[in-house]
Length: 277
Image (cartoon, rainbow, N blue to C red; front, side):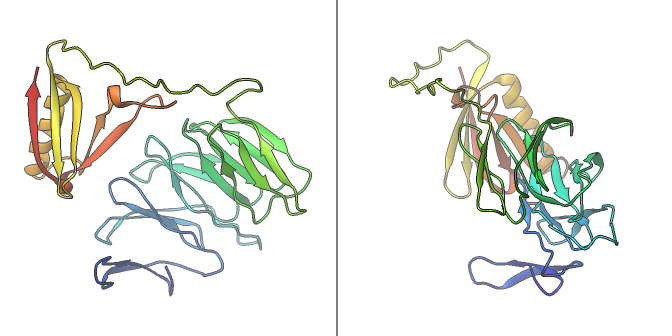
């Protein structure tokens, strides 16, 4: 991203596929973020949040509040929540949450430039502003805020597997905050023995999907879920419906996640078969 344009290159030969012009200043830049459908999100130096289609056309743009009197800017990279919500900052202040159509869901007023932000596996958001590190839920409600001894400027938040937040202050200190594993609690080890096979219960099927990369995926689903997949495929083949379909992995869920889903992209799908049992 340079010269006031976003470029897309062919990874095989390096040729330019397309370019899209934006208001861009190298001092106040954000890296592009891409979701599972291939939509690209970025923020320019005046606070406009862009959603660019995979073919380089504009999907939507949202203009945030611009504080022309402010001389401090820290444009953070947009990031995406588990539900597809897009989060971005305008480089002056505030965290904005937008839905997939570019409609504002909520704004969290930081009153000062937001220096860093991230989201964890539970869809909780963490931000650093001045001397404070705060946590928000997915509705933009503040859960807690901790004041550090020194300002956190120029340092990005990082998160460990146990949920501990790490950040460096500008006086040489590193802060470790929180963590889901309490003191004295031992992390749960996964069972050594493989899980027993799921007994057939009727009205179910194994859906086998083959992608254009040669990868084959299997899912143990109810026939209702299989029919939803078939309806999506036939609708998309007829030219209507979303480009992706989410499949609940059910018994393949591992770790502390409440739910895991595979997003199947229509253009990547070669064949599929349904084996009822």
